[in-house]
Image (cartoon, rainbow, N blue to C red; front, side, top):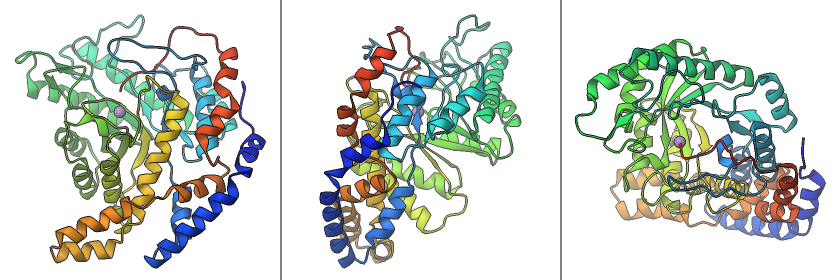
Length: 430
Ligand SMILES: [Mn+2]
């Protein structure tokens, strides 16, 4: 099982902090009460919030130029699960892990499921990988996979996705996320319509293999690795394909997969309206698909996205059941620390959005009071909800200060002894 942080260690870490935390929470409770908000209700909702972590997120990522490995990196899915277990133990809002195949493929899925059960973890959506060639692969994906001009290559990519579904079923997952790197680097290189037709035909074959209670999450991305055109490039193409494929196909929003300054919260609203929002890959970015920690660059944007999500929840919007996940790459931080930080920041946006007085906002919208409508959102965003997050976490057995607790435990240096470097890692920017 490897070295792990014990509940006793967490309890000891919490002990000295808890009286202050309670005071802060009570003080915030009094202020919120004046705004007609029950802090007990909000804290309860916060404690039920969940965001999944990606298996590839616990390894050090890299850029197109280099990768700088960290000591004590997980060498396989079992060690990745151990790290994810520590994350959830300290933050208590990351109970599910999203695996990526074939990186996380194991001989015995039952053994992996048991390992997850022992750590109190479940599995989120499974991810296929047709953006790189595997050893001994018959057909190369150099010129595409599901949309490739060659039928045998497409069939190989379809078979891989179907295999991912079967592996996911054994792990208790109920979603397949398909991100496609297919595209072109030169004008004229690819026939736009024909390549999308081939993609759709392939996706129909995968959809046919999808169990009844599964979701097919389609992930779009504007560019990279293709630099001129991408087959599944934006939410427009995404929702069109999801509609064409059927009810179980929905669109996944990765925050970094849009052009700078795009109004992502509005895309989210559109997807909600047409019952096509599969969920999210949360991360942040300054320039492109930077995969930076959630809320590190544009926390207000993340809040505005949650404003749409909480609004849909408030209105009891039909067919609204998105799944939340982090999708990041860590080059200069410890991945466990960054994932904990991001999970907390995503949870923070959710809690801030819960503070928006919806009826007041609707009133300002109806009377065209632009300034007060905006200020209603700002009031919620500017409220420091840290004590709610701490209380939600510790009520569930988590740590008051997860990063401090992680550092004090010396987890990384202890597992480094058990994990000599292999020089390989299933991680990257996806
Ligand atoms: Mn993603």
